[in-house]
Amino acid sequence: MRAATEDWFARRTWARPPWTAAGLTVAKAGRTVSVVLPALDEEATVGGVVAAVRPLLGTLVDEIVVVDSGSTDATAARARAAGARVVARDAVLPGVPVRAGKGEVLWRSLAATSGDLVVFLDSDLVDLGPDFVVDLLGPLLTVDGVALVKGFYHRPLRMSDHDAARTGGGRVTELTARPALAALRPELAGVVQPLGGEYAATRELLESLPFAAGYGVEIGLLLDTHRERGLDAIAQVDLGVRKHRHRSLRALGATAAEVLDAVVRRCVPGHPGADPLTQFVPVDGDWLPDEQAVATTDRPPLATLRATGS
Ligand SMILES: O=c1ccn([C@@H]2O[C@H](COP(=O)(O)OP(=O)(O)O)[C@@H](O)[C@H]2O)c(=O)[nH]1
Ligand SMILES: O=C(O)[C@@H](COP(=O)(O)O)O[C@H]1O[C@H](CO)[C@@H](O)[C@H](O)[C@H]1O
Image (cartoon, rainbow, N blue to C red; front, top):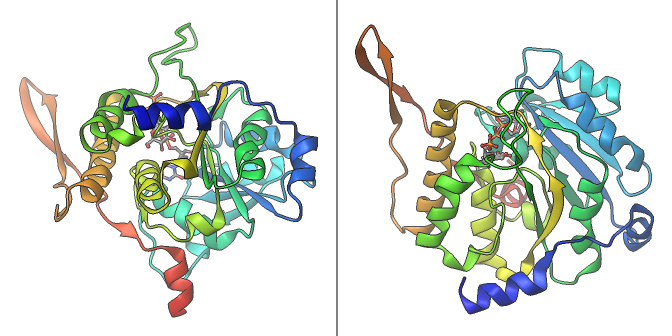
């Protein structure tokens, strides 16, 4: 790592987060907290994630909101039963036609919530406790100048219940995001989990930044926060172990394409955005091309929409 990044790592990384929910509730000092879960067909896990945060509701956390991304299963019912407020993505900013993708629902979540601080958690997590939220809020509530806090963790790759692996997860992180940052934004080489879906930020920051529509949203926010606010506005906390549902390598190919697109559009001036991704599938002895759309558009900062009243 470069010397400045090493310095940042030493100052802005908490390997053993010291905060407690009670202590941070006092530290809120009038500020409010929204916990947001983006969810697309997560009926099996969304209730457990909401239940993990539920004990904090009314003290450290002021609202738990699941933004439904067009689920066709029982996601909304399970989330509501666990104690979350559920908002359909098309019910937010109804005058703005909906686009597909994770970034789209995170962007819309800002218009569906009111917290001064926003915590994002994926809805496919398993075995998490309330500490994820407490630890992500710690630097935001107690360290001046921090606007974005990323979680990091061991990432076991469990493709079946029998897997005992403790590592191997974060495939797009290791094979696309980390190398891309090394090549195009090495100042961010100290961020352990640049793609992690567990992070917290001030509303003021989030509403001032564009949101990449698809899976490029996390790397886009990280790059834009660094560009607009500098490295010291970013912090990271060790959340222990992160277990979640793993998608196929083919699906992660399209994710990687959106991650790389978000990086290149931000780091290579004038780049027009990626073409659709052509993958190949074996059919009766032939390899047939299969094209995947790559989300290459950003939603504008929500603050600009509010300013123009659109
Ligand atoms: O169009 C989308 C894609 C994903 N997600 C949610 O975003 C989180 C992360 O997505 P996923 O698990 O597919 O990403 P991975 O962790 O596998 O890269 C999960 O809660 C998904 O339900 C969503 O709300 N809308
Ligand atoms: O980190 C990664 O490589 C991918 C895939 O993780 P796995 O290989 O399935 O553990 O998951 C992350 O990337 C997505 C795109 O940025 C985020 O939306 C997810 O929250 C995050 O889990």
